[in-house]
Each structure stands twice: as C-alpha cells, then as structure tokens.
Length: 255
Ligand code: ATP
Ligand code: MG
Image (tube, rainbow, N blue to C red):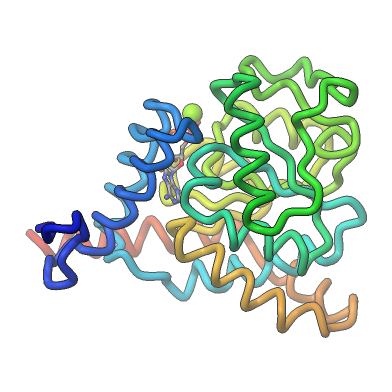
C-alpha cells in the first residue's frame, strides 16, 4: 500500500482516498485537526464511496449557484475549520480572493492555540487577512450552542452570505435565523446542514474547492443580472433530492 518513503502506491484502488486521509492525519499531528475531525471525515467518506468519489452534475450546478451567490454578496465570508485548513488551504485562500470574501477561523471544538495554528497555516498559503483570532473583535451568536457561537464582528457577525464547508447543523440553522444566506459543502445530502443551507454542494471539499475556484474565474466576468439568474434558477431541495436518488439508485445496482 505504501512504499519505503511512506507514499501511497498509485496502483492502490483507494489511492486518492488514502492520500486525503494522510493529509488529515498530518493536520492532526500538527495540531490543525482534532480527533473528532477525523471521525467527521469518516462520515463524509462513506457517502463519497457511495457516490463514486466523483463530482456529479448536480454538484457542479450547486457549485455554480454557490459562487454566483458569493459574488453577488456585499459581505461574503468563508468559515474555515481544522479539516478545511488541512485539506484545501491554498484553494480556500484563492476562492476568497476571487469572490472578495473574508476568511474567518471558526471551530466546533474551539481552542486559542488551534485558531492561531490555522491562521498561520492560511497565511502560509497566501492569506493576507484571517479573522476569528483577535479577541478584540469577538462577539457571540447566542442561538449557537457550541464553541462556534464565538464569531468576528468584522466577519461572520456582519456577513450576508457565509460559506460553511463541513458544518454542524446547529450553526447553519442559527445563521439562517439571522437572515444570512448559507452555502455549504457536505457529502451527506441528509444532514441538517445540507437541508438548512440555501445552496449545498454534495461533494468532497477536496474536489469542490478547486471546482469553485475554476468557476469563480469564469463567473467574476459575468454581470450581476446573469449571476442573479444563476442563483434564482437553483433549487436546493430539488438538487438534494436528485442526489439522494442518485445514491439510492447506486446502492440498488449493487444488490
Ligand atoms: P448535521 O449536524 O448537519 O446533521 P452531522 O452531525 O451528521 O451533520 P457533523 O459532524 O456535524 O455531521 O458535520 C460534518 C459533516 O461534514 C458531515 O455531514 C460529513 O458528511 C461532512 N464531511 C466530512 N468530511 C467531508 C469532506 N471531506 N467533504 C465534504 N463533506 C464532508
Ligand atoms: Mg452535527
């Protein structure tokens, strides 16, 4: 499975999945990721296995609507947790740049040490500004019952559109109650997050983020009317239904 240098053999049928796990484990060892993050990845992986570890047409459609929504936003914010920082640091910084969004560290299992590590990691990958680490700007969202209630006044607290990849359902619902639009990336089309968000990209973050970067390059040249048409034409409930149907059909075929 691994050669003498510890590299996954490209011939292994699950090579890519093992490489992704390797990145998370590295993130865990360096203090970016918590043990619970590894378990959360496992839940995602199970769905990825079923959808064939490929980006579907439904996910592409959702990604286009998501990028259009971020480009139309007045104060877009991308929320970053440990898993996202470990898996797609470069891409998340690039996407923020292309859509004019702020990056904010926001953790379910909060710790100042980990927040600073994630901030440094994002800066190493090109981020000029990272919110969510300076106590001076902290405020609370009382509706959230986890460490994620602590947000930055300049970021999530003031945002109109928030991208929350790999999110917990509580916060998605709370952000919606505060009239914010929520975009998420979640491999489980049945999660509370997937159902509560305005746009859900049912795909692995390792594929969805580079895809969104490519789409952002194209859509940043579009006028607002065309972007509006893209967001208005997107129906999240319909898209999620199509994804669950695709999953059930895939499972039925293996019987
Ligand atoms: P919810 O609280 O929304 O009902 P949950 O409690 O089942 O979801 P959480 O641990 O709160 O799950 O959130 C993690 C979510 O992220 C899960 O839905 C999981 O499928 C998804 N996930 C994990 N790793 C990835 C990944 N690499 N790409 C996309 N989604 C992922
Ligand atoms: Mg949850």
